Length: 91
Image (cartoon, rainbow, N blue to C red; front, side, top):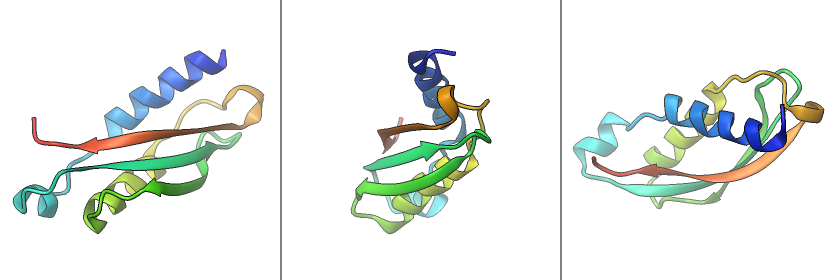
């Protein structure tokens, strides 16, 4: 699998696992969490950090939980590092 195809797979997995915390929704909180992470040979996140906080710890924690939940096939070359934003907005 090419790195670009793998990146697309990660985007789909993140979308599939992203959830809006009930407490944040009830309080009307929205925000964007910037994250950087590395996928390991098992297809799981092996390193993870917040690069930009949403300003709300519940949303920040939800972003970390989302990334810890993803599971993909092994990345090309055994490791894949990237960064993205996870958005929490009302639809």
